Each structure stands twice: as C-alpha cells, then as structure tokens.
Image: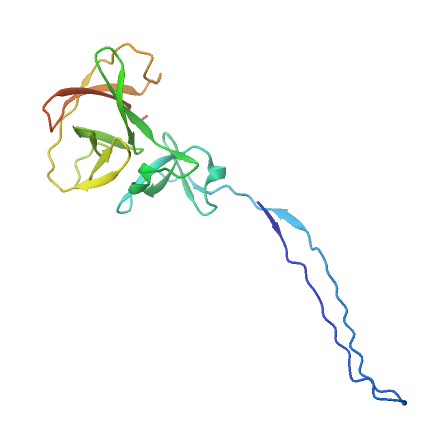
Length: 206
C-alpha cells in the first residue's frame, strides 16, 4: 500500500503595520504546500519461526495461502508443514481471504466422493455423526472436541464425548481424491446410525 505523507501548509500572518496617511492592517498569507514524498509500506504480515504451541480458547490453525491478503498485524507461523496463522474456530464457516484448511472426503467403495468437511490444520478426525465431523487437536485426548458440519458450522462437545475409533484402511482407487503422500483413508462407525463409513484426508506431514 502507498502512504503519502501529509502536505504541510504554513500560514504566516503579518499585521499591525501602520502608515502616516491611515491606519492600515495587512494580512499576508503565505501558503507553502510541499509534497514530502511517497514510500511503499509492505503489506506482508509478521512472521515467526516458532513452532505452533497452545491455541487460545476457540482458536484453530489455518494454512496461509496468500499473505498479501492478510491484515498487516497478522502473525504467521512457519511451522513444520508450511505457514499457518490462527483464526477463531467459527471462521471455518466462511474463511477470510488468504487462508485455507484441509479437506476431509467421504468416499464410497467405488471411490465416489459423497461429502466433504473442512479440517483445521494439526487436527485429526475423532468421529462422525451423520453430517457432523468430530475432530480433536493433533489426535491427542483432550477436553477440547469440535463438531464441524458439512457447511462449516462449528460447535464444541463436552469432555467425555465418545469417539468413533477410526481404523486405517486402504484407499479406493479413484481420481476423485487429491494425489498426496500424506493422504490416508479411515473406516469408522457413524455414532448416530452405526453404519461404517470411509473418510480420506491428509495427516500431519511429520
């Protein structure tokens, strides 16, 4: 963005001069307008090489896809799998420009995609209830469990919520899934219907 320094105006008032013929007051105004110059202010956000640590309440990590679209005071963390930043979990429903998340795909036996969900960075699938995906941070057992609908609406679940215990399995041969060395497929039991479903998503890069 370009920041132009304010032009400055000097007002000089000279008065109180008197002549022999009559009292005369002169007002002399001298305006000096100077364009000091212009400079380019970088729009990239602040960066740090610190690894992701504890999140604040209700916050999740997202990928930085274009730092030029982020507010100048955004902190960018150069993590082990790429640059990330932090957003409120509720922002998953409508992500701001310049950031992105992982995608969880539901596939059938033929490899056709039946549905998708948004997955925050460094989070893993813990369960499935109909159209709602249950996720937890880094696959660790914590009191924090998010429920994400297929439209991105996020709610929290209380401690002690039962998981679906996903089981690793082979992915169906299909071109509908992205090609990635980190893509894995999991079978898990839907907690609401007890039906076995298959999900595919990219796990942590480390």
